[in-house]
Image 1 (cartoon, one colour):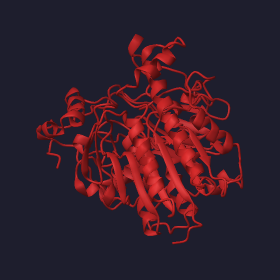
Image 2 (cartoon, rainbow, N blue to C red):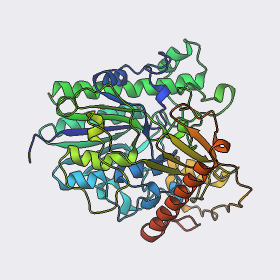
Image 3 (tube, helix red, strand yellow):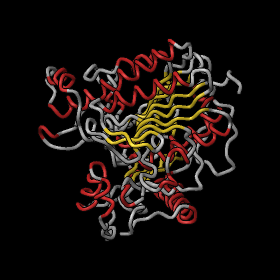
Length: 468
């Protein structure tokens, strides 16, 4: 195998907002390693996830296709709505076939139960982590290539970092692709007490202090990884990418509040407003990208399949991709990104014109969510918790049918000019009715097309049938 091909380390945090980086929040948090990567590499100011929730976002990141096409429409692993269609081709598949060693460490969440959806069968020769949506940070249950691992007393973020370092050391003489999916700072909000106190001493409420402590531990892990690349003389020929699956969770009251600074964006996790879908991006690759401090071109999760294939000199699959190669953008060589990008997510099943958006150049049209359309039933929330702590019991339970969705009176669409209003505070829909109609037509056409693709290629379980 040709050793000149670069290594790729793709680091994905969980529910980390742009405002969680200390370089953007005036030092409220502590993320010096990520800040240094940004100083040494390129920061994208308009980097978009493909979904405001994790499983669909990850499906798009891995396949270069809108999540609806892949069959991943929700996060409910006990209902199978997180399952990546078996005909989908991942970045891991593409790079593995071209001769890369591929590893996924951390969170999978693209098929938690059916063995056909195991990461080892989806392009990753090595997997160490958990297949569902979250884990307890202390009392964790993970696996290593199918062999169960139970908590040994270590904090899960440190375990994932140790596993990543081990992977890099073992494969230092090969071209490798490492997808490192940390679970921080996703619920449950847990961190070493000494770390939490440091942020409480700054006057922060306990919940936000805990989130910043979770991020600080993760950041130190990233520092260790970067140091390992330096020590092995791999840094120059390794593309390191840091991002998050979606925007931050910003809810709760008083001591339970997770509300914190996110550079002024409207919306948060679950919402297709900018706060739910615009996510951090840092890229450093000394041998391949001359330092371009900032790019303002819109980049989307679906762009990473073709981009990483280009980086790895790997052939793209002969399937429809929704993204494009953005390596020229990162190199400052001009823009070739699609004019229009789309989003839609509702709980249990996709619903047209509900929590849906299209961005077309500087304009963004948003159809707000209906009341209750993003909520999970209490029974599903309980089963989701049981799956993490007592999976055998959880999987023996019968799930009730997915709740129906009675269509209420639709909320009016909103139109924003992101060039002058990037935080989406000024709705100009009444001033531009023709543009609203045109963009609604684009959104409707896209929704119908990806839904037809999903139903044809990746039928998804949403009933009360048993998970296997």
